[in-house]
Length: 91
Image (cartoon, rainbow, N blue to C red):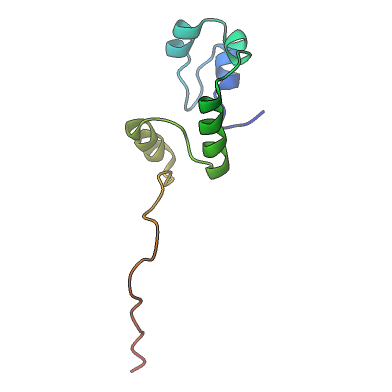
């Protein structure tokens, strides 16, 4: 039901705009069985963290490729103060 999820493509066995299903289907076989497996706590924590931040899970290269395809900035920016603010010159 989520347009950004790869589940539909993997369940139907059909590639879409962002997903090529063959590599994971070859690795895991029946996608429905794979999705119904229990996840370990560490994996669930990681998924929940990324779900809250709305950022993809993956390597730096993977995220960069998604940024390039979508034109969106998906990596977090520098945290903390941005430095001294410059005053506008009212002359």
